[in-house]
Length: 390
Ligand SMILES: Cc1ncc(COP(=O)(O)O)c(C=O)c1O
Image 1: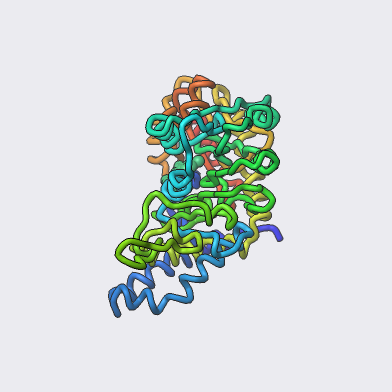
Image 2 (image 1 turned 60 degrees about the horizontal axis):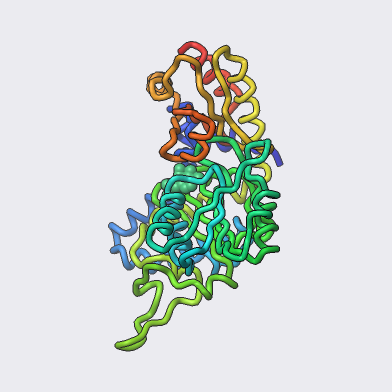
């Protein structure tokens, strides 16, 4: 069913204030997400935080079930963690990597992940190997396949980068990883909420995502999926009394499920809000969400490309809702400020977020205008009119 745009806009108070093309930063949440979180905060004030959590027990468990539906996995394979980076870290730092082991990654890798690779190179002596792009500017899957050897202990790539519309061919990477028997960690931070994500189709063993971006959840929420078969072999780098039980003076026992990657204290209100956001996306249907997002982004790219001096920068055979561009003679940062003055939200992205890619393409900075299904063609027209006038 096509998305009922009038309905989703009526559910989204923010669209009345702002033309929001910063969905890759943080999308505007639906009213129901806000009220879920606020209602729980009120309940904490009314009856006490611990007691409010007990009262919400069933709804908190349902958050895991919702994320499991979103990813087509079991709820026991889901950990709710405060953001995508920590979720990713909890998986990465629990892998038993040793000197000489190789990590295969791709050109679009996100800075925080790459910094963790560099740290593992420094502290453990692992080797980072970057798989080149193919002619579309996405990871070259044939090259990946050739580059795997017996020392390869991890394939870790970003599905959709922070700096462009590229959708890396995650399922093709997953097939290579499975054939080689190498664990596959997917950063799905920017893809979650704007397209279907099925861990069986993708074939990843671990997947991290955030709540606030295309899923439209509250800030400070994220989650990690870890496949059951690998989960049982991973000892998280940090443990607490939620992740493990202190069983005797000299022993502890890890939780059997993915919640071994969580910690005890968390923002319950935001977690409940995340569950509402996931349910909202599931009710609309991720396939229909993708169709509309891809169509709006395609229109935005075409119209931007019509402006003399504008150069659209998105790579990939398949593209998503993130639209990036430069405009000859205009500083991206200044453009962001000028757009903001006209109540238009867009963002910028530079090499410190995706250094391999930005240095390779010699792009010092670009404007990132990311659309969601609640945006409209009229907003695209207005955005382009304002950009043209800058
Ligand atoms: C591709 C990618 N991975 C990871 C992150 C980090 O997400 P978080 O801020 O939720 O930790 C981002 C944030 O922009 C991102 O774009």
